[in-house]
Image (cartoon, rainbow, N blue to C red):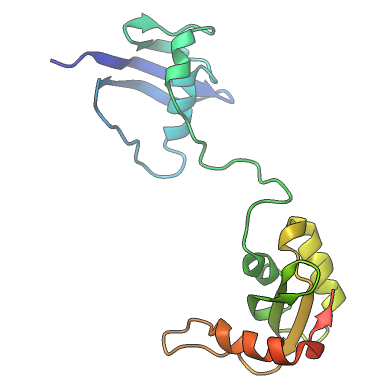
Amino acid sequence: MSAVVIQIDNVSVDRGGRRVLDGITFNVKQGEFVGLVGPNGAGKTTLLKAILGLVPVVEGRITLFGRPLGPRTSDRRSIGYVPQRAAVRPRFPATVEDVVMMNPKVMEVAAIGVPDEKSGEAVKIVVVKKDESLTDRELLDHCRQHLTNYKLPRMVEFRTEPLPKTPIGKILRRELRAPAVSKGKEAMPA
């Protein structure tokens, strides 16, 4: 018989003057994996926050390892919680291509590595414009706002034709690299 690790007994939580959890009861036994599933607004996150003591319980009781949870219960450190959304830092981890595609004037892009005398290799982006007014300076400024320095493109090449792709739609970067190695002058330096 497994020990009860978390006991939720008739728990209710109010948020903003409204009851968002009402009489929730269940147990989690040692060794069990539990998933909270439900539509948006069902109270999944609120329940987790109640277990963590981040929101007050107005009725009922939550116990962890048989002890009632108070505001300073050290057992809370035994619970891991990853929020659904965290605040995104301005320089969030993303690929160069993801960031370039965030610009509404870009139709498609491929980021490739090209030889660089200083660093050995530099990032070059090959871009097909959606809007002809897009400039390399505008695109590089956009990248500076969203990428860390080592990911910043050093060169921009604009193309009018779609990027070369396999039959299943994967961009053929090897074909994009070949001209950059032999004709590096076509690319605009950053």
